[in-house]
Image 1 (cartoon, rainbow, N blue to C red):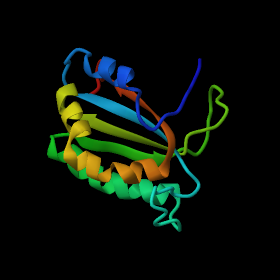
Image 2: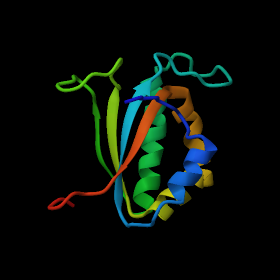
Image 3: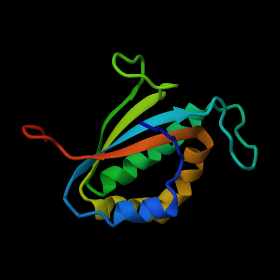
Image 4: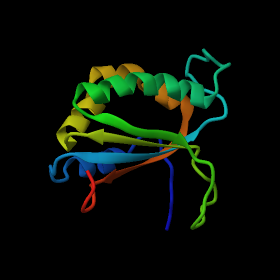
Length: 139
């Protein structure tokens, strides 16, 4: 299995994702890898860690997610690996629930998201976003 972290999807990948079927609520699994030091294009806030910069983004994105009827279900740090093998572990995992693909796309393309995305870019070395649906017996 090839694993490649990225900060933003390629346009073709985003178009394919958002062209998927509208099948109701889903949870996005976010596997996050932070930069050691934040990297803002203007050189500001060079004293911040990547996690610090990402936390600025996370505080605001929570409001956006909740504003569209979603919720942050979990946010925590990766502390070990029991099974499998990867070259390097992610630093953190976040689970965000969205009411629909359309709502997620609207949020992702919103001016509000564009206004906070620089914190995400400054802090993230890369990530994986995995769309999931609940299994039988789970909500």
